[in-house]
Image (cartoon, rainbow, N blue to C red; front, side):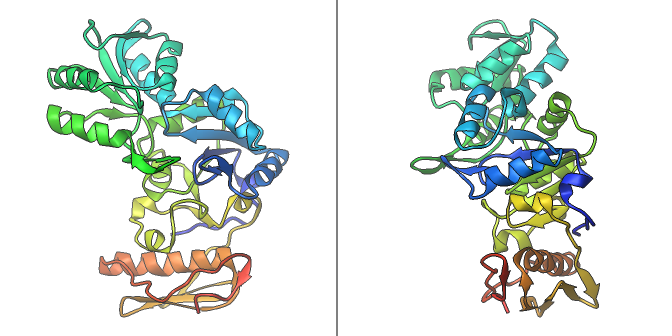
Length: 339
């Protein structure tokens, strides 16, 4: 269940590990208010790290994009799944390990920076690393698949099944991972969220004793935080809406919920249970015969919190998802929608 924070989250934590797409920006545009909220967090003393499962872009390109959007970011503030994968490889192979690299510029750069040697798909190698890369050719994928099946150690940067593009949601690296997995009957070591290495790599590179993961996806950002044993903040500027939130499995449930990054600078109250009726700051939610019911008025963030608490409690007790038909979330601020 959700936790409480008497003061702003930026006082309770010293590092915010921020997912990018859906949290800081959407496509090529900044999330409204994101730059201002992050600037306020920095001013309050919170260290920021920008964490991405995208292994194709090197950190320098990511930080340049953020700067163009008005978000202060140095190259050292960005940590990618490619860097996490390279650290996993380096830890096992040591300096000079020979790695077949199937991926984009970001993965090649990370492997080289870790002191490893990228080699061709047919060369003598100690491991293969895969990541999203539109230029990877099918012939190389086939050869790598056979080598993985025959025993070559495999590290995958991430398992994201989709990736946002200018022409819509497209297949992500996870589709290739699934293809290789089924053919070779081998499970890769995964570096990106929800696996733990990426968040561990972020703390190692950026520092922080009390990290907080901030994301918009339950199955990568929030589950990744649970796997790394750190607290999490779910923001509702990306892919998670009411159906996804009420259906969250225990490992996908955040520590805190907020509409956007302004939630870093606010206190967070926790809903209270009174015999199945959950209340918080003017809102009350319950589940009757499997249907979610919400009444009252107040702040939108508190609406989401009380709804989550009621839905998760009912799901855990009945092992079934809550019916949200007819329930409309508040738009913003103080709103009485969803009665």
